[in-house]
Image 1 (cartoon, rainbow, N blue to C red):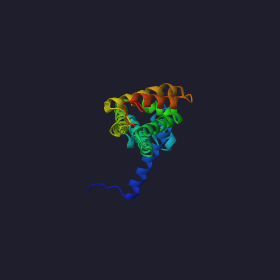
Image 2: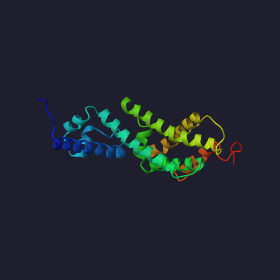
Image 3: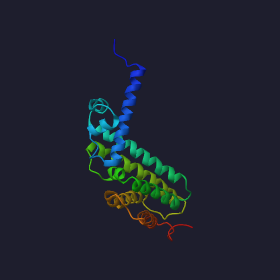
Image 4: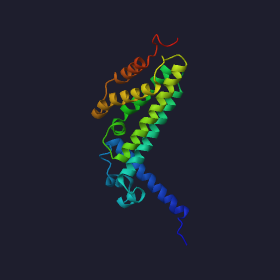
Length: 204
């Protein structure tokens, strides 16, 4: 007869897994991926090292799940911010304020998401993260072009360039753990100029 876990055992295993994941999330936020060793996660979670490996056979798998969890949270915040405003220029502003503002409030975590060297498994998740952000910006830009708020343009190229520019502009301040008060307004001004908001090519 095949062994079947009881509900109590399954609940205990699920709780242990959640503690491990929560511990890893905290450590990455504080120290980045480099500081997130299996031993450190086990100590923070209050479990044996073997318990970590029981749920995550490889460290890269644990870090990939950490990345997925954080990136989903950040993407949800970005999409939510876009939905609270009317008009493409205002929505773009809200998205940049949200993306950059959250990054600068949690610089170590944001640097890990955007630029810290990682295993290929985690790096693959980083590409997914960028695609989600690209799609969010592309949708708003396309709406703006359709509404005449932005001039005609290659939406895919504009979204890719914008996501890349925002990320690159933040990497230095994030690595240093600080940013000047002009960082976010400068990013917004750049984005509006790059997309042609208010230009003569758009309808008023």
